[in-house]
Image (spheres, rainbow, N blue to C red):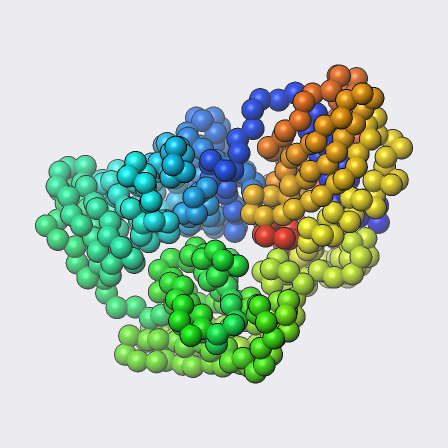
Length: 490
């Protein structure tokens, strides 16, 4: 068991093997969209093919379809920074996706059902475009944030509603007419109807506001796993109707409030003493609640606190306040739920998960690895594995982001020496861990070599996938870390 799980290494070493299978061209995330799965009930179809369970970190392009069932949630992150959050019951197809010569995006999405939230980066070139097509309209933007809801009306006809949060959306109805939908307004177009003459104001709704003083940055993770806030220099706006505001400190305002637990992951670039972290429930009639906690930060600290939020029958927001802030080792550790195994040696961490599963079956749990741990595990394990490999591997490095765990290594066999690159993506199929490799870049070696490597790869991946006593509900690839989240199975 110790070798099987410390063999995150074997996945990495096996990936080196995978790099040498002759395959078709890889699709790079630099000109496509990367899928992040928040709930595992997400299917995907490639270029008109059959639907199959999607994996976290998969790359999507023209002709591909993402479909969420009644529980599935996911986010498509496009190469120029725009994102599309996909809610349960939604179906979206990438009709066309291209990168312009100036680095801009040309994107057409077909949404036939459900709800999406688009956070569109400012389109900097005249030939850039971002359009969502539904059965009743086309929505065109040039840098904005908006919701698209496609549903059946009481008469059985399809109705599309656009709610604009920022900027302006131009709506062109299939049956004729067009209307501009500025921030704070909405419009609905039913099947067979023309566009209305003007948009209407959105009804007032409660909001959550989180704020910290200067020098402290944070990301809010909502009850559904969507994020909003500053992740380094990048602004994440996956939560519908959320805003990231600057000023003296950082503020995040969430306009689509759902009941549940909100997690804050906080960092500071310099020591900060006694920083006040404040949350306000902003009801339609006034402030419903205020919560506050105080935390001091050293350089490099990663701090997590959570805030439960309820919505009463009177639509008022309420909370029991922040939980005591605690230090975590990675963003994945902050996002994981249940009993989280995120520290100690890789092999010892796995053994702790096994021991816990033996006494607590069916309990929420997660195991987390950082990219530095993955690299070290590969380096250490390679010392034992090298003798059984028909190639020499050196210089292994692993990095992790939302597109998967990426490997680079120097591989040589006889007179042939190359730098190999690849990525591992992962997901769950009925609780079973699934691993797959993409973005393979290396020249093929003779078949006798690849056959031996293939056999080692199959054994390694099978041992690792079956060794974890975890029914996996989702896999999380985040900058610098990787988490398997689910419930204990034995």
